[in-house]
Image 1 (cartoon, rainbow, N blue to C red):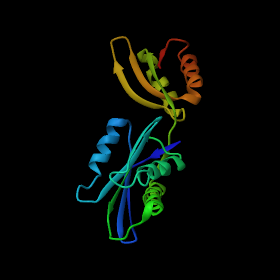
Image 2: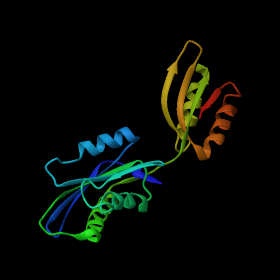
Image 3: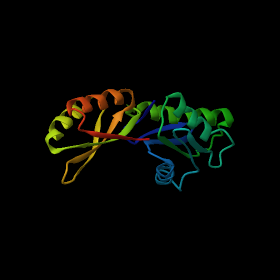
Length: 195
């Protein structure tokens, strides 16, 4: 699965109607609602949208005939194997009726073209780990974490006894990375994984 790296927009004119698609990444349902609100134009005839965040998704036809706008936008997201993405397609009516099939092609096609033009990044499932190390092991542990592919150090919290490192470990390599940290610290590191 992939998500978008940044917000992207694309404009098309189809039979005198102007369509503008805006697509962007999101983390959750609240961000999706904010994205739709921020990228809807109240002066347009229709602001149709769809978003997906994991198994949760929503879409709206915003006054267009049922199934002719929101669902084709969601299908464009799914066909391109995207997740954590929202798309708003705004239409200014140009005087030519497109019919149900024409509307579905226009909304879905504009959304798909915008999504194809957007820079994508692969979604890598991660596990959050809390790694407590004594000060003498800190430099070595950070060096090993930094050299492991896909590891992101999110935070370091210092105490009188040592440092707690919060890191995101790629799920595919989490066991290997934990074993490596345990080995290089001779078992002194205290590692807990959050579920």
